Image (cartoon, rainbow, N blue to C red):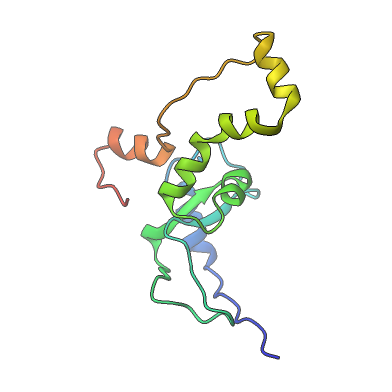
Length: 135
């Protein structure tokens, strides 16, 4: 049985540049990143066939590398940016569906929902810094 091919390691110097891309903050939530605890995410997900062969959608370049906190990277997984955005916007409804404690918190005013359009940190950063968006 074949084993999946390993992805090429990203050189340390390139990783440092990605870390600095948005001032040492997560590209998605804006949280300050620890120099050792952050993860490199692919904005356009790497899609691989069964045995690790890269498909035409794999993009291994600096513009596709995003500094990410562990939580955002794990929640985004291999989803597109718009799917990730939608998943975040749906969180309050998902919590209401099966979470009794969440509903009690709403009933007692301990939790307030604020539905809003999600704007990722890097989108706001690029807008404020007049840079070309990579999205």
